[in-house]
Length: 536
Image 1: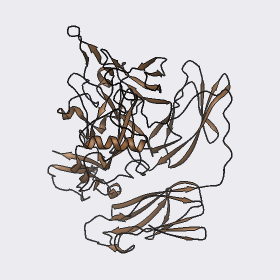
Image 2: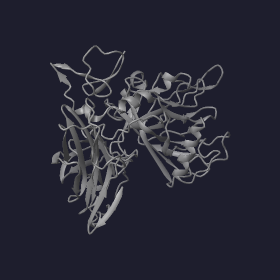
Image 3: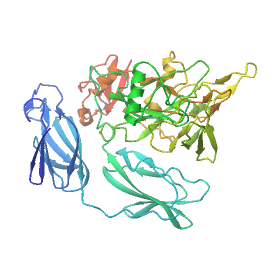
Image 4: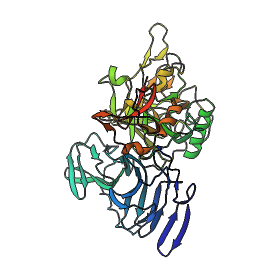
């Protein structure tokens, strides 16, 4: 991008492939396309201007162009200049329509107001300890996101108050608030916690409602890798393999170590309950109607240390795992009903070269014990700069037992749906289906057409007998099981959203180039009602 500053205006001219703004192609029968080189996320100061000039392909004399800003039509030319006169996140879409086929491209523009605001209120002297996973939450349009305070003292009876636009929207003994994303934008949410009528904690949160699912797909292309290519976060819980034979003083160094190990085919340990790793791919993993990706592990026969899988879409398009996590349910949701613990939280406290104490949100306490097999390493991750680590998620039922005849300790395997639970040779049992996605607390199913990030965490809080130590999930990499299919699916232009998919009362069928299929189709991948189907 080329930047030029004039007075208080900033002109950002986007350099494009080919001639600037010219109509290229126009081949008969090809759907229109619109492209923009570089980022689709912009940040401007209040009072600045931004000019966007995309490239259009396969246009005809009948093609119309429309610019839409925050659901309002604002232009019909080949370029558009955005004026940053209102703080917040704005969504700008350009459409090219020929007949019934529409191609579109969307960018997000965040307008920053750097005017100093009022000083934040000071917490009361008798404030209670409470925290949130983050201060800003992202969610796709049309979905519901949960806001839940952590570290609440379960021995006291609090009143939880949620406010929006100065009005109370929920008040009572339930700390969980469900925010429905009905329109795009930034929405402040205020949280307050009272004890005996006195405020003991308060937090200001921001919910950013992003475009609807699919706006920020990253098309898979020839040359993309099936395996994960980046580690975004590596935060193991305390455990006997943490810091063993490696030294990391920063998160970046820890992530580099983890990625290097997995590239070599080796595993990394996630420590006790909640310890996790977050990996990403160079493309979107498409939902294929079957197993979509696999996660390798270090499973030993009769020694399962199951990890739970969470997945995330890049809902805000910034390439970072800072949006909404969804859990992939496993077999325990079916055969161990009532034995799973949802919303489980556990906090570890650093004790240098000693047993690591923990306490959970159910009133239980314990330790991660040191053992004679791993005596020289610190069990608490050294690159974490805090004295405590708190993890939350679903806790699986214990799977450890001692065989009465031999006295050996075993960890029985669950049927399916977990990492480090079945041998890598049983690929189906080490594979995962995006159709398993649920809300981690409510267990309500969530429809995901693709994902960008995978998180694996240790699902058990368990210490084995005979000095074997804590149950800790090991991970040695993740890969897309259908890279070729992901390439084909992601090459379907978003123009299909604008196709009139009804003909004579029946659902129309389209091939991957957006062409209507009239005769009886053969085997392959097609589009029906805007969704992918496989004919066999």
